[in-house]
View 1 (tube, rainbow, N blue to C red):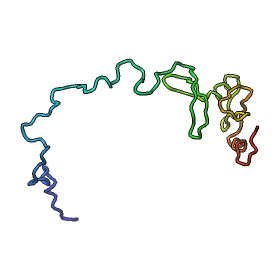
View 2 (cartoon, rainbow, N blue to C red):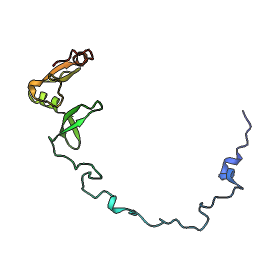
View 3 (tube, rainbow, N blue to C red):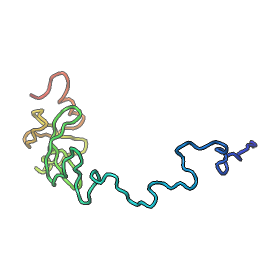
Length: 145
């Protein structure tokens, strides 16, 4: 067993003998916010009770079954539909496919036959396995035209 002198750790004696800096509190000083519970330094930028998120350029909350367009990381524009509150969105192509009475199997995805991802007509959608889907979009120019 090692014999160590740990007395310097007790009662903050490690800092004993060092002077505090100019900004540290000294005995008897009172902090500026003592007794001020729930102060509001900038009330105009705070959330108001019962308000939807409308800060900056954000849109207010959209109603159920709203359809919007978004660009993915590849720059492809896709349609999305709000299916549940408060903020659950699904691909519009998948939503239409399932509303038409088809069931999307596990391991499968929806492919747009004309390769236009914003054309969500039911006759333009087919179910393709995720394994075969890249073959429809390969780089050797054998895409559907």
